[in-house]
Length: 456
Ligand SMILES: [Zn+2]
Image (cartoon, rainbow, N blue to C red; front, side):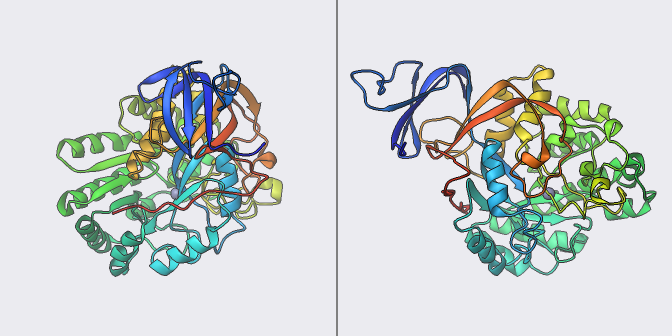
């Protein structure tokens, strides 16, 4: 069957910005042209119409998710993940737009040359639409404006060591300089907020026990870093976004800062919302990430904050490595949490993981779409084209069976490496079809993802 320029997708559960209802969605030239009453549009099954119809029945139709926190790692560490594998995983998981993080690739995206290397490498191997973050590191203030003009969506900085030598963290003076420049050019600063002094003072006990690892990355490291960042944002006027909030203890600081007029948003991740420290098996370093997965009561507090609108987005922070660097016992590794690579692979599983837990807690598909599509789209200025089923938007769509249960088999995911803490879990919610700009994505056929640029 060839791709039709005009098509109707019909579902009894279309998740629109104002709620879920039966509807017909008319697509023309890759955009949503019209949203009409269910069954009302003249389609090829009727004598008065010739438009191809896909009738999903009770399967839900969602906007494609927007994942603004993905480490693709290519070029340079393609054996960890790459554009082809990451974007196939994204498409299979209902994610139609990803924004790639500026580190773990070599070179990092801290110069226009680094950005060009990314773009060239990604050419022809993106199954979903793809944009890039830049990085703000010590000494690259002169690179920020050229990168901003070249179309990066903002700049990532680390307040503590990043885990890779070529992407150093910023000390306070570097942070001041970076945020001052970003306020001047109108860029969004996205920050990994853990405080290096608090981390250095925490007990360091290597080994297979998750409790020891958790104690080495205390919640105080997050609160101290966020407090310092907010103070710097207040003084420089920069717009800041806190990446991967793991500790609910930072939330009161964010509320107070917003009341004071600081422009600050925050995100959290599927693993902080669906996993808990109490259940991490000894030596299972698939669960290691920084900041760490904390206890169940903290997880409940994160859900309460989500329900209150305190997080703009849930994004994956997909950050895989090869299994040997994870030191996984089944690959002959020591299972030492202190030494293992810190990063969780979940790009293909974020939607079912979050939906499984959201539903248990009484949330709707509309809530999940707000957190995983509309919210992240607004964070990066893509509202208007991405993140909602709305007239004029790209027809990035997902057929999602909210009751479809499946057991996660790591080796069957499109991720390059078969490691994920969700392995063996049964999740509810299955992606049946993903459309990118009106065309079904076939991960066995040629890719047609586009590179996106942020317009300053
Ligand atoms: Zn990350």
